[in-house]
Structures are given as C-alpha cells and as structure tokens.
Amino acid sequence: MARLPIPSDTAGFPEETRASIRYVKETRGSSPPPSSYLTYAGKAGERLSDLVEHLRYRTSLTQAEAELAICTAARAANADFIWNAHVKLGHAAGTREEAIHAVDTHGPLDGLTDDEALIIRFGRELLESPRVADETFEAVRARFGEKGLMELTAVMGVYMMNATILRAMDHQAAPDARHLSPR
Image (cartoon, rainbow, N blue to C red; front, side):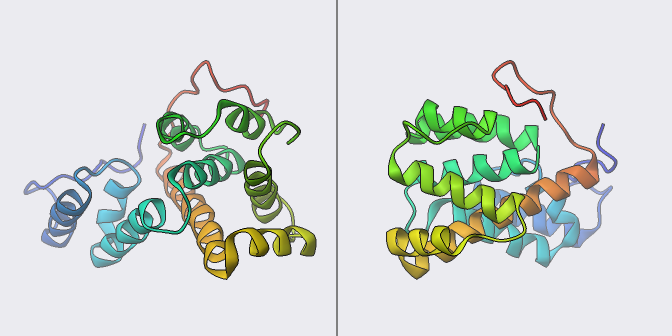
C-alpha cells in the first residue's frame, strides 16, 4: 500500500499539486506512478516529468534501446513495478526477448547483438559497481557518441530516481510470472 495517496485534481489537494497534475496529464496524456507522486513537488514534479518524457522519446537512442536501458535500470534497482511495465513497452518497441531475459537473470551477454550487450554491460557497471570501466565507457562513446553516452546515462539515472520514489512510497506491484531474477 502506498504511503501517500496518489494525488488527484480534487479539492483535497493543494492547488500547486492540482496544477501539476493537470500539466502532466496534458503533456503526457496520463499520470501513472511515479509521475503522479512527482506532482506533490509542484513545478519540480512538472520538470522531472518533462525530463523523463524527453529521455524516453526524444533522444538519439531508438525506442528499443531506451526500453532496454530502462529495463536494465529497473532490474538494478529491483523495481518490479517499473520492470513489469517496461518489459511490455520494450517488447512493443522491438526490444528482443533474449536481451530482456539476460537483464532479468543477470545472465551472460553471449548471443545478444553488440548494441544490446553494450547497453546492458554499461548499465550493470554504471548502476551495480563502483565505476564504469574505461573500456566500456570508450565502447559506448564510440558507438553512441558523447550525446548518446550522456542520454544513455541519463535515462538509466532517471529510472533509478523513479525506482527510489516508488520505494519511498512503498509502491510495488507483485512480481509477475515472467520475473526470473533471484533478487
């Protein structure tokens, strides 16, 4: 159960929160968690929602690459709510099942495309170890350029933020049957 109610555009919430709810719904079409929780922060929530939207849909990464990066971050954060949503979105965007399975099971990267393996390796090093190896950093920079490197880093970082918000709210969906990770 969530520790705070999901805000709505009703009299029970401050006008700043209500205005943020309207803004997020107008710009994104809906306001699912954690975007809905971000509206408690007013303008900051609006800006964070815009950032998430930009990093998901308006970068040099393909949708399949962005969704693989998001799934990698969700698994690193053990955020089942985000994981479950983005596995489905990843499939719809063309992210291959083999890549999602490798992320979910923390399995080997053999048999993946070079780009899939690079995104997952980068995410594992970025989010699960103290430092990204120089070799991995240079490989990501060579493949995606400085812009893509920063976008990949940012999309993974913003989804770690989303996972943190959901953890603070104690908002977790039950893992679905596809979740194989022993975490």
